[in-house]
Each structure stands twice: as structure tokens, then as C-alpha cells.
Length: 369
Image (cartoon, rainbow, N blue to C red; front, side):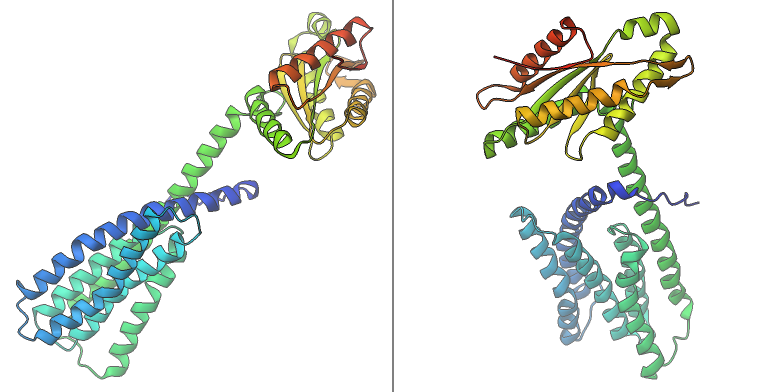
């Protein structure tokens, strides 16, 4: 029984699209290898075991198989060239369509026969119908094209050609049965792709997110810092690092308990996100300490952000289960210099934070030399 469909959250859809293109590369590479190995084998079987007396018929079979071979070779060449374009999915779809179309054309070619050749081709068609279902990226959406076009052509031929219905049509029931199996396989594989992607995204999100506040954690911010440092070096711009620490947070835990302390941290995280500009980032650095990253900053703009954050924390009081608590924040502000490392700018912000504590707390101090 197929499990319930799990939709991809909107914020992850772009990543899922890239994941599916990557899957297209892998599936297309494997399917192309299968095509290039087995189609020559089946061509030899046609010429020997099946023993067609008509050489022209053999050449028709070869011509039917040629598009799939050409597409498979094209896929392998593009794959080995590591072409970065989004060609893999449409080429995989076309390759699947050519394989089913190949067998559908052979079925039409031998439909008027009443002997074993039609049974042989029907068995090949059912096998292909099931096989291509395992090489779909978007499940039934892909199969609507892969199955729809060639099988519609087959039905139209049977209806309008006037060819007699086979004396023993039982083997024709293999085709709709194979379609049903293919639909189930493709649907299950697509849903499994979705579940696997969502699970990996959730795992990555939890690894980069502070469980209590929902803010990015230190590991996540270190990645952002590295990216911003590289961008600033490349574009000769500056960014600011703000080290923020709650004032007398230990007293809150001692007087009201750690549960109230956790409430304070959660409210603080909300005030951070509500106050900062769109491109600014904040992470829980450790304990009651937070690091804010301000891209494309000057000393004046960084201090303005620090003051805005400080005021947003100081007023109004924090509404907790222990009542309204007056909470303040001290901040150290450091503007990155072109010659210094990430650790060095963080160290200067940390020293400025220490000065803010010494000078009376509830203030922002700009780092000096």
C-alpha cells in the first residue's frame, strides 16, 4: 500500500528541484548504460534465436532501436563532459519515451501476426513498461508522457487499421497490467524521493538551528561568517560583528529558575528577528551570548543597529511565567578590516563587549584598535 503523499514545503522547493535534476543525472546515466548493453544483445537475438527470414524486418527492428541508442550515447557524452545545464531531466524523459516507443512500434509491426512473434514483442513491451517506471523523476507526471504518446498510437492503430483481433488475446492483458504496476512503482519511488529529501533537510536544519530559540546556532553562523568574509575580500567591502550578552542573566536563573531563563532567551530571539534588517543575521553563540552579522556596514550603521537592538530588548519588560522582568543587553561592535581574519574581528567585538560590561552594562561599545 502506498503511503500518504508528503508535500515539499515552499521554502525547500528550489532545493528539491536541484535534487531532482541531480537524480536525473544518475538515472539517465544508469539507463543509458543498460540501453547500450542490452539493445545489441536483443538485436542479435532477433537475428538468430527468433530466426527472421526477412532481412528487411531485421533492419526495421534496428531502425526502431536507433533513436534510443543515439539518446543514450548523447546522455553519456554530456554526463562525462560534466555539462552544468539542466539538460538531464528532459533528455532522460525523451530516452524513456524512445524506449517505450521502440517497443510500441515493434508491436504495431507484428500485430497482424498470430504466432509467437507477437507474444515475444508483447512480453518485451510489458517488460519495458515496468522498467522505465523505475527511471522516472516525477512519478506519474512523467509516465503520462512516457506511456501516453506511444500507447495512444498503438490503440489508434488497432482501432483504425482494420487488423483482426488476435485469436488468443490473453497476452494483450499483460500491457494494462504492466502499466498499473509501473504507475505504482513510479509513485512509490517519487514519494520516497520526497520523504528522503524532507528528512535530510530536517536533519540539516536541526544541525544548524538552536533547539531552544529557533535561531541559527554557532555552526551555522560560522558558515555565514566565512561567506561574508570571502565576499567582503572580493568586493572590498566591510561587515560588522556584534557580540551581544544578556546582563545579569545568571541572577534570572538563580531567582526564577532555568525554565524562566529559557523563556527569556526565547523572547530575546523574537526581539532580535523583529528588529534586525532583512540582510542582517543573528545566531545563538553560546549560553546567553549572541552574535550578530551586519553585511555592508560602516561604524555608524553598525552602531545604529546595535542601539536599535539594545533599545528593543530593554523595553518593554519581558513577559514570563514569573511576571514581567526587566532585561537588558550589552553589545560589543567591531567593523571588519581587510587585513584581519574572522577570529580577529570576533575577538575585537568580544573585547568591546567586555568593556560594555565594565562601563555599566545596557550599552553598545565600538571596538578600537
